Length: 325
Image 1 (cartoon, rainbow, N blue to C red):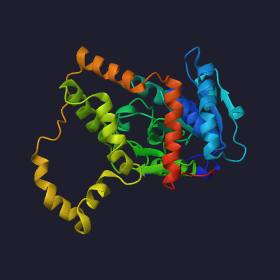
Image 2: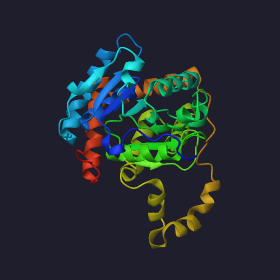
Image 3: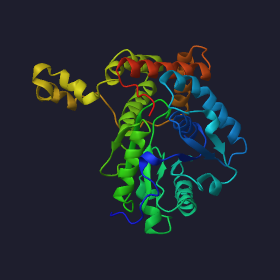
């Protein structure tokens, strides 16, 4: 779709970002943008949203300091607005991170488009809804045209990837603007040419997750076995080389062609079950109990700190740790 309303500023001129929704994802976005030197205004309807958000930013800040902060970056540049309208009044970009409920996303995105200055791009952190399904209540073409998906990974302040894609009513210029902005904001951007429920990475994660649930449900492996099979095996390769290139190396000098010719017949082997198993109480309890055992007495805060340091170490070791903008 051709652009009908120009953005009020270029991606490299963005100064203030509105983070709508201040939970784990929205708060993680706020921490990331603050660390990149932006002013951030947040809004969340929960009565205790502000103290929770400030605690999240404070907990993330040591990791962000180890990565390296942009000039002028400070948690003090965070403002929590009392209303949605005040949160977006001066925003150059809006990141929506409300709960994953379709009707809520539809109404909220319509409200944001009505309250935000004309042309300001509004991105949703949805984990899987196509923008076409979420932009149905936007009043006019100019409103719907600036709604895009900007799907991050948790925690957004450390995991580089963001998947960007528009809906049927989205201006292509808005998608390109968002992709350029995220790149300047220190993210690793995949700009998708077409919508796909769950996008790319979540569909791959979901396939692995469903097979893990099947193995636990059938008593074929424990939670600890499954996690170790990734962290001590292919996960070490996936941290710097994706599954396709990893498989290509399995073909030796013949590359992917030899790998497919040699291992192609195994695709018909019963190595995976992509249909989701029934998440009955027994399977749920097995997963919960298994994760508790794997935690080994470590608290949530302990695990978050360990994860954050681990991601930093992997990024640094593989030369992909971005510096301040």
